[in-house]
Amino acid sequence: MNKFQTWGVLKLWWLVLLLFSCSSISLAQASTFSYTRVIGFSLPDSLISPYLCTVDSKENLWVVSSTTNDAKALNALFKASPGDSVLHLVIAFADSDSVRNITGIASMGDDIFVVSRMIPSAGYPQPYYYPFSQMFYLPRGDPSKLVKFKRPVYYDYGTWYSGLAVTKDGYLYSGQSYLVTVISFDGRTSSPNFGNSINYAGNGITSRPLEPGGGLTYPNVIDLIRDVAVYSDSNYGNDTTAVVFTSRNSGIDQNGVVHQTGGIAAWTGASASDPLAYHAVRVVDQLSFLQWGTSAPYGIAVQPKTGYLFACGTDTTRRWVKGFQVIGNFAIQMDELPSSTSGDLTMVDPAGAPFSAPADVAFNGDGSIAYVADAGSKRVYVFKSKSTGVGERIEDIPLVFELLQNFPNPFNPGTIITLRLGKATKARILVYNSLGQVVKVLADGVLSPGTHNFYFDGSSLAPGIYFCRVLSDVGVRAIKMALLK
Image (tube, rainbow, N blue to C red):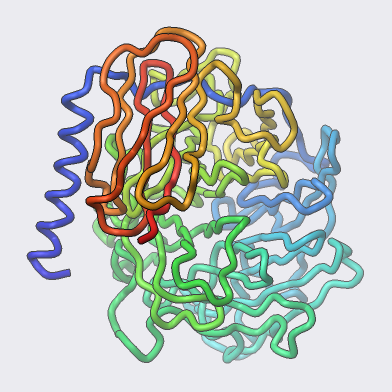
């Protein structure tokens, strides 16, 4: 990034900060979820170190235990059916599986994929950073049908992968230690290339790290991409605008100095079938909630329906799971799962989950249930949406605080934006362009209870994507709009 691009980003972020600092409106809001119950493990806590998790199409919860954070733990896969209070052991990986530690899990339908870092082959040198991985495939979650995509020899998969996400069109993404970038795999069972890697971002194009935090510069090699998240309704095989999110923790050098390399990155510009041109930007938020420390994995997941990126604040200064709306490289907090131990004191909920070190979050198919695997308490906490119906958007709670999708959409040149309020509310209604710049203020003041319609005229604006956001003393809502010309 040259100095002019850097100044442009800084200027834009300064404008966003100015917008919020000049407003007397509080962005804190009650959670749209309630904490309901806890799930334990069928094995003693001494053998468990919950790491990442996923939910399959039958709403079974899958959690991997990993030696990544606890050398005494099992590298194992656990499952809980809907309503279970215990996660049962499905498979404990043995030395014959060449698993050094499990680094990712994802589900496609009711199939399960697990990625791991490998123990070196016999006779091969074994440095700490041994850079080879393998992936396991469990059709319908059946361990008796387990398939190893790669044999445990040094040239297979070629590097160390961590985190895993599956797209609806059958591709898999993982973080890669080499250059700290992303790589895609063919997860389509009907494809002759099923289970094979496709390519990684920047291969043959650049020798510099592509993840904004930097490269593998520290001997312990701990500043890595730890988790990956994708939108459940996007096609990644050929859509270069579909966003891939990665979560990376910070590193520590040989002198014990923490280097703030951690955070969330948003990847665009390429596709899973041809990932070479991917580039990433660091996602930033107003209060630096997403500036990660040295803990792992800082799990992430996109909630279906709302499209909010939920992120786990794993370290002891956070102990929360927050939901953000990400626009470009800016994140606006929209939600937080109830936490009685949240480091964000404005959001502490005495009736919330007693998070110790929330490692990862996963949602069921319609986003109405959230599961959080906690590495500290060695439990999984369960949350249910407060929305009034299964599959209903959280924003769609009539006559309480509802921002309807504009109509028509796409539009040219004008469209109607409707806001419904259950009580008198102080609010600002703003329209932003894709750069995060305010192009129109539709309202700024106290609005009466009831339905309010606002006309937005885009005749003087360039075609493209615009966002309408309501900032109020009862919460925040936003919609995406498309102007065509």
